[in-house]
Length: 331
Image 1: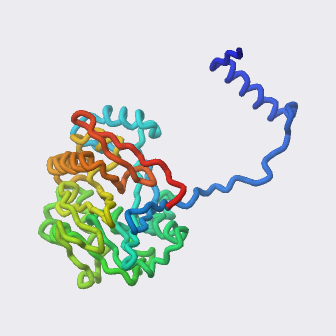
Image 2 (image 1 turned 90 degrees about the vertical axis):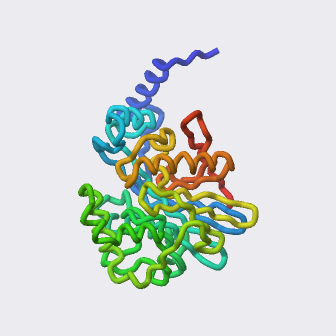
Image 3 (image 1 turned 30 degrees about the horizontal axis):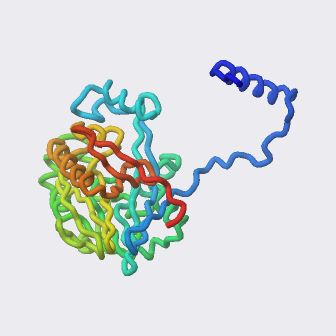
């Protein structure tokens, strides 16, 4: 019986490495193909009844954790949660994943990502929605509806190309009425409590300039597109909306930003992320939404879940845990 321990394995690896470097080992060949330096396309298809749905990866942003990324506990606890999730030390990683729903009669894009204007400055980390739509064989001109869950920049800025033209020129733009009422208000903008919120107001004005008459405002609890019903999930923003997508006897819940990264705010639903407009209401919404999702054993799609962003939520005492769905090689 062979007994391998960590020291043996490390010694063996070191010897093989030395042999490769010195040319004394069994092989001295180098790779015939240089590294590509590029990531694979980010799209993943799944079925909901007769609907073909596609998770479109807009990228993921990794940045030094701000002192108040989690506003209601010491930064040290948030850093420990990041390390427990194997994020780079001192950093936090936030993914972005719009959803494309093909109902058969309508092609609906739920949220649009950070926009191509961020692609080059981020060195390709975010702003990848259009290139991943193209990789999935989708022409932006064929998008019938851009359905926005709320009006934060990482959900709306993909509506514009770098030159300001519309990325989805033939799409109806649908926004939650309550969010539009809040973010389009000059009075609310004047009362913005911090620079981040001031920038959000300015971004809404810039992104929607000239589009005001083309925007369709929708209410909660209504079918906003074939088989897609809006669900009230306020707190992250005043009009923040999730969606139930149903076809036949199948349904998924698209939770938008009920939680930011689940490693923090689904696992710890009482933690408050810096981006929530009304943290206490967002906390209550998380519990209500995830209690429902867990009770229904529903498939849940999260904008800030790790790609492909499909999973199930289970109760774990007063907390929750995410069970990612297994990658399905067929549709």
